Length: 329
Ligand code: NAD
Image 1 (tube, helix red, strand yellow):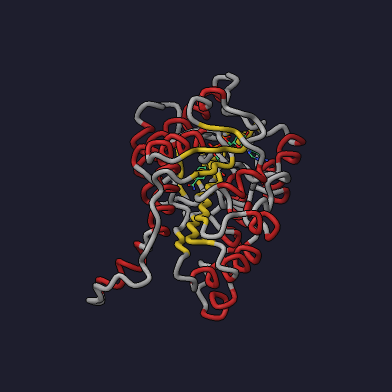
Image 2 (tube, rainbow, N blue to C red):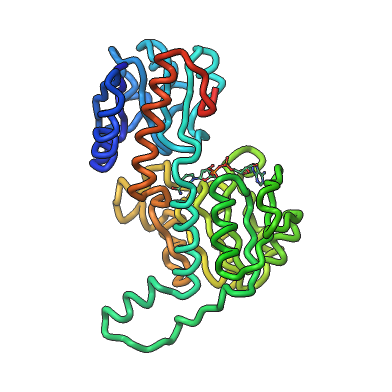
């Protein structure tokens, strides 16, 4: 099977080339271009395309891929909110994903953001580098015996529950489906109660119509003053303008974001001062208690290896006509 691999970074090529040794029927051609309508035409002569979180796998792209004979979309990530599933279904295209390559990678990053924004590590690092050893502006609070509220307790949320429990926190959670195996140390509560009781709120639900802007000014107002909010899931779970309003109201002790609404708008690829100045993400960065990372939650050696192996196994299952739990459709 010939796979065209979009949006290639050097670390992708390294991990997929290593995994290819165990998949002799697979051939990969790598391109740095990301998948979008203009680049979909490159898929001529391939059997499958491999795309990522920010690829544009919308209606127009899928129509072109269909014309080029593509029957398989390999998403090398868990989320698939950027894929137009209706159109894929219409053209009988199979969409496969990597649902749980390393939940701990993302959960550990969520806790890193929570700790860093609580203890102002980003600020402390810069102060000490400038020879300022004073502690002003660096006070945080203990997580021990505080309440962690986890929204979405699938694979990553469950890992985050375990980490918070290990810190000696009381762990409460909200999910539309309750995970029985967590109930020994996690109490499921309604969303309102989670918002009003948590000292740390971490988002681990997928982006869907029902979760779009789940964090908005109304839900922010229900939160405790001095709460820490972490989002490693998808940017649009949080309404950024409302988050800025909440920060101005001094609602948050800290905010840690690995994902943000403008991620897909290429705001940071065109780094003109004018665009940066007006981006909401840049406005967020102007607050000292906000820490932002660039969608790196998944970025560990173990996760990259698992992504490569599962993606190639998905391709092999398609080639050999097998069903898979990794089918999106
Ligand atoms: P998962 O499917 O295992 O779990 C998602 C959970 O959210 C499920 O338990 C589901 O019932 C729950 N949920 C669905 N709708 C909900 C709602 N309205 N309210 C509350 N909970 C709801 O997914 P996962 O592997 O744990 O991944 C979670 C999300 O993390 C993904 O959707 C993706 O957006 C994000 N992610 C981010 C990175 C990163 O690098 N930052 C990497 C991988 C995944």
